Length: 178
Image (tube, rainbow, N blue to C red; front, side, top):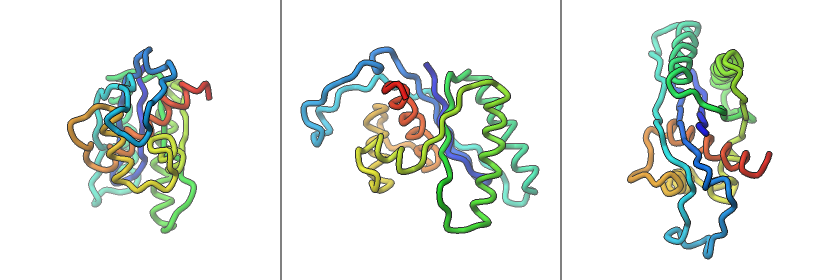
């Protein structure tokens, strides 16, 4: 099963694709949650991650078109079974929130047109799923993503790491049966 995680934005949209093996769908017991060395492999593998970047001098419409086209190329290439998108649930800046909402709308449209099931997760849900603590800081979450995906280093940029976390959150949600 392939899951595409997306961290929406107009300037930068993060994406991360993970493959979930059958072994990860079985519940695993951990001997010591606090000892990271004893965490068993999850059965998740990283396929690809990165960002869809748009130029700031372009119109909003042009940026959204680029996002739509690039996302369609990613979907066509990897054929994900599920797509997970970060949900907007609060904002500090109205102008930023509107632009992120526009990007999210384009993302949802692209996924819906391909008839791929879509899940939405708040940052709090992702943090809880990845670290077990909803107020975990970004570095804690990124460290756990690196461990869970057996990566040599923390994925960069942050938007791509966030997208991988969203994909993991979706995989764990599916594992629980919603």
